[in-house]
Length: 408
View 1 (spheres, rainbow, N blue to C red):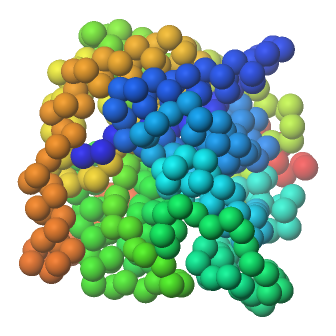
View 2 (view 1 turned 90 degrees about the vertical axis):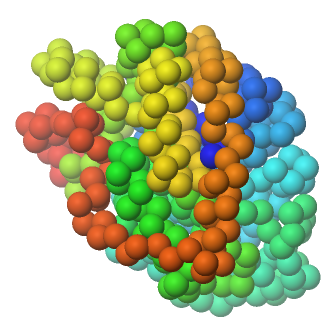
């Protein structure tokens, strides 16, 4: 099992001078710490205009800085929005990061899931999948060919040589964002690694691993000429401390993250309110005061707890054959000190048990060769991306947001 860390670069209100500077500098230090401790991957999102939830519009710049402060950790676009970027600019930036990092770039791709992000770039929810698939077709010849051109519905590119070329041949490993669980199966069909940005139980993970590997081995339909990347990763809320109680006390940001997802998820096309009209941190704290039991239940989910508690939880995920667990602890107002201490304790007390797993390697080799046939499991019962213990935000709490969106 591999372990990654994940950054939305969240910054709840109130905002003060220097907050964004400290956010970025602390995240780079955390990434440097994770590299020193032996974590395998660092993933950084691309989002635009999402106040408080994500202040990460230029992951290529952040990852380029990280490449100079780290030596071994894989640096992942988790993800590059193919809907809001020109294919040539994507290929150029991926190649530059690969050169700067000495071949440590991971190329995750996605569409965006909100009209708040898509509309300013001339895109919409109805056609974003078409745009994504055409961008994939345009990008991959750029990594290998001296000259390439593309003439499609959404992009038109005359013959040019896109330089530089990446260190990894023919290109860095490919991943696709799976913000909705059924997209995991689609990632398998396309031959991409699945970046499962959900929070699921071990039972749900087992079902989706089967769906993913059956898709990639039995129903493969590549969108272009590229190397497939059979890997499945799932995100989990994360905070490791000496006791379960201390870990939950330090992990308040996990429930803020869930709250924001739920709050926005109930608006049409996940539109965010007009700038400055909703203070998400205030809304979150109102919800906490009104729902203390739900807050406590949510903190019992994910990988939040003592080393022994996290070992028990990870043993269940290992039996599901997850390839990578992506740990999310830069969320809400979780402190830099607690994040670093959590990374240190987890690396010392938990990771060694799971890092070298010949049984999983043999299972995966057998599945990919066809020697092991996986059951086709019905995934209908496992489509809740939040999990049973997740934050639930009532309709009344969201009404103000929805009304605000309708008025803009």
